[in-house]
Length: 202
Image (tube, rainbow, N blue to C red; front, side):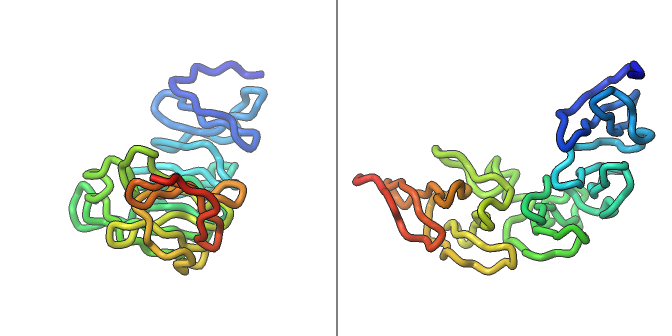
């Protein structure tokens, strides 16, 4: 094992962890050896073989060898899940708040365009909403992800089709075939058809 003076460390995923050496980030393996020369301004843990990285203020994705797969051109970038990742497209404003969110595939192509802007996320303090039961993750689970349309939540599939109409005031991600949602003061769980399988009485 080669000991290095790391100035920042991330969690291990898929056998590698991001670390910072001086002001640049790269990956180490579980023996502590660098697998590539640190070159990134910021580097996240791997997810489905790709890691979000930042270079010159923009985000893109590198592979496990640190090689760019999707060039850094996004204002924000989240982890890949089930083949898709949430990104914030650059807008005109320097703070990117007029940019809109979208899901991209592993080729960097936009698969699903969303209504939400960087401004809306900053105001709500969460991407989709801010409410008692918490907001959803920004990842696909069980092939679906919650999205907000006109102030209500529904679910889209990996093609961008709205498969569960946006009728809920609250929603979180599916897990094991069920998703917690809320309508007014009622909360419960729906299945992947959008049918309530259990809900509160008040």
